[in-house]
Structures are given as C-alpha cells and as structure tokens.
Amino acid sequence: MKFTKEIKIALVAVLGILVLFFGLNFLKGMTIFSNDNTYFVSFKDISGLSSSNPIYADGYKVGVVKHINYDYDNNGNIIVQIDLNEDLRIPKGSSAEINSDLMGNVKMNLLLANNPRERVNPGDTIIGGMNSGLMGKVAALVPTVEKMLPKIDSILTRVNTLLGDPAIANSLHNIEGITTNLNTTSQQLNILATGLNKSVPGLMHKTDGILTNTNKFTSNLASVDVAGTMAQVDETIANLKSFTNKLNSKDGTLGHLMNDPTLYNNMNNTMISADSLLINVRQHPKRYVHFSVFGRKDK
Image (cartoon, rainbow, N blue to C red; front, side, top):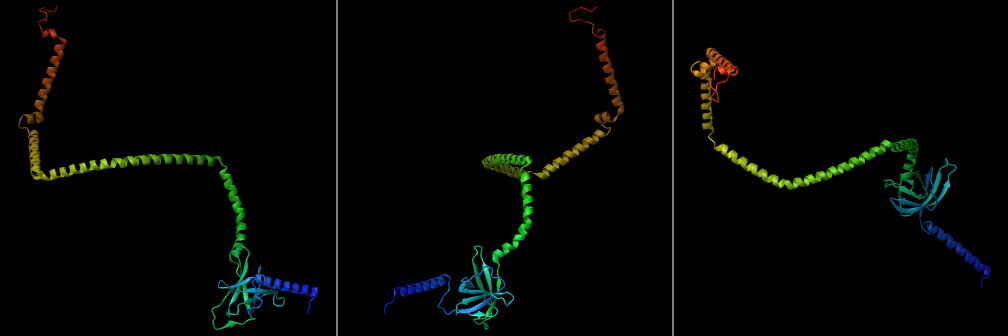
C-alpha cells in the first residue's frame, strides 16, 4: 500500500503535534500516562498560582497543579485541580497553602494532619489558604515604613544642618587634637613604663637591702635590755625631780636666788649702779684716768 505525499505530510504533522504536546507536558512536570490521583483545593485567592506549579508535602514534590477554575456558583471560590502521586495518602483535616519566595516562584504545600485512621478520598476537596511568608511580612511593614518616611526625612534634614554647622567642624578639629595629645601621652607613658621596668630590678635590690637592715635593727632591738634601760630612765627622771624640788625650795644658793626677792633686788640695784658708773666714765674719763699714753697730761 502506497501513501500519497499528502498523507505522509499529514502523518508527519500529527506526529510533530504529539511530540510537541508530550514535550510541553514533560517540561511542565506533568505525566501523561501516570496513575496519579486527582484532588481539588478550594482557595479564596491563589496569588499567582498557575498550572504546572509544583506541589510539596514535607518538602518533597508529590504532584503538580493540573487546572484552575473559578467557581461562580460558590461565592467566587477558586477551585484548583491537583494531581498527586497515587501512593500518597492524605489524612482528613489536612489543608493546603500557597507560598511564594522573593524571586516570585509560587508553589503549593500540603499540610498533612495527624489522623492516620481517616483519609481524604481522590476527588474530594481540600481547604486551601495563603501563607504570605517573608513577602507578606514585608508587605505588612510597608504602611509603617510609609509613616516613618517623613520622620526619617526630617531627621536627615536636621543631621545635614547639624553637619553643616561650623561649630561641628571646630569640635571635630578639637577632637582630632585631643586624640593626637592622647597618642603623645600614651607614647610617653609607654616610655615611662619602659623606664620603670628597667628600674624595678634596682629598686627591688635596694628594697631587699632595706628589709635586711630592718631585720638587723629589729634583732638589735630584741637584744637590748629593755628592763635595765627603763630602770635607768626612771632613775634619771627621779634625779630630775629631786633637782627640781631643790630649785623650788629656799635651801641652797639657787633656791635663794630663785625664790628670795631681796637677793634679786640687790643684784638688780648693783647692776644699775654699775651701769651708771660706766656711763659716768664714758662722759668724764679724765676724772678716772690721770696719765697720757705719750707721758704728758692733757690740758
């Protein structure tokens, strides 16, 4: 049987379409001849979810999004048809959530409930929700950031004004000078510390000598007859006391001299007479001297 040219062209075209169809589905992650189980997930908002997006359970890929339909009869919910591996058993009470990362990649996560006795049958509907993740947190911060922007702008304006103040420049210059002085002081302290380190051995040697002398002095003190010395001191004090008593009494010459006013008055009068005599001699020397150094009298 011979095929005409038209039939051959048609067969090649059909074959190309089939290859293209299977290739596109393969690139999307869909399997054509697999025995995957079909489930449905109801969302209020799918936020960028599309067909062929992957589905994960505990971080492992278990299926793909097959179709997305808008449910006009049920409060506008969005029904997502998903194909999951036939070996996966979904416990009742499980849910699904949509995640997106900073790069805009969207995926669906199955949150499997801890209910090993009851399972969701293929064809049943699972409740879905949104997990905004990091992008949601960033979006929540946007209003706060918008409120803060005027304050930040005002702060930056004040900072620029403050930095433009000549007093700030002078203060910075003074701080630089203080820093230089501190560096100089630090260097001098280092030099002083080096000198002290060199002097410490000598000082320690001298200290050892002083301690040795102190020990010797202490030993000498220990060998002194303290009792005998104190006895001599007591005897000396007694003699001084006896001498003081004799001075205070009227017995003896010193006692009369210190305690008898008559003797004091006589001595005082004698000193006055002697002083008058000396004054008279100075004023009238000729009355008392009758010879000349050169052997003749003065006229």
